[in-house]
Length: 462
Image (tube, rainbow, N blue to C red; front, side):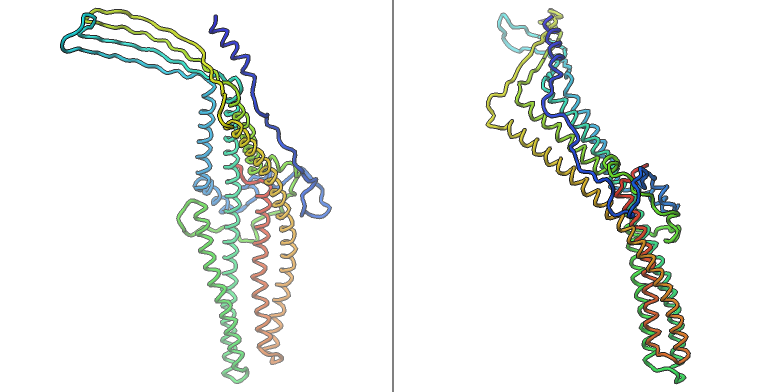
């Protein structure tokens, strides 16, 4: 009856849990993202709702991302940490339950020499039993620790999702940069071939006395400039392939190619959506909130040290003894009883532990809010960058068209003897720079889309 009463009291007191319950702290959320199209309506639809294989249409890029999802080492580390956090939940929860240990023994003893009348020459003792120990969680110490461990598990899962979003954006960005270098190399080689032909014509004119020697040197300048771009593009290609290889968990090697740079997206990106939805969608915000939840729960763990700790222990055993061939037993033993420890003096250690836990929770609140502010900033930066990169690309296209026409007319005027080769030199430089600038503007426009997708929390779907 006493044991039943003790267990009943434990059940009644189990509802007493010290420490604050977690509540999401209030944060300031803007009504709309800054940086979008002026006057655009706020809609629930967002680019982040697209799975990465729906956003990136290039089959080769999709294949590279799939390989990265399977082989990337950062992602493997994040997955291993999830397993660690899952095991920590089991460990923390185990303290809420009794611990049962079994023991058994068989000891034989023999006395050599003279013995007293009360001693036996041979003794053989056998025993076996169980020991039970249970710390009653009156104040919620273990429940709060389990709550914190579960929050750590959620944090590790969101960490993995954040690694995935970063990995998808890094692979896509590196791939677009690679295709940019490919196109720059193609333009530079075509320009070099054209300028070599022009150099031969100028040398013929010089040998025929129609042109001056300075015209040949100016044509050689154009050839050397195109050659420099070829060298830079080849270096960029290899270094970008090396970076992609690391993201894919491989040693540096050549990478496959798919669609050209201008055919990566069939349509412009979708709107950014509702700002408040960012709190639930971005893995790093969810990770910061899980860390805050864990820190809040650990305040309760620290406060539980103010209160007594109650232990319930018991044992049950059976054994027998043989003395010079005479058996006594078997005998049984059963014992159960509580014990109590009360903190009396610890030189402020418990209070310092509570203060430390509260300080860590306050830091977690600040980190959570900082993560949200940074997230809104990244979305705003991405939106304005995409909008301005698009406007810049339109201007660059007009510049490239005008440069081609200027170069065509300059060559006609030079061959007709109306102008010097300096005019051709200047127009050729402008055309080459405008063509390279157009390629880079298209690359930057694609990279801006990737930044928006990552900033909105897209890319962690498997």
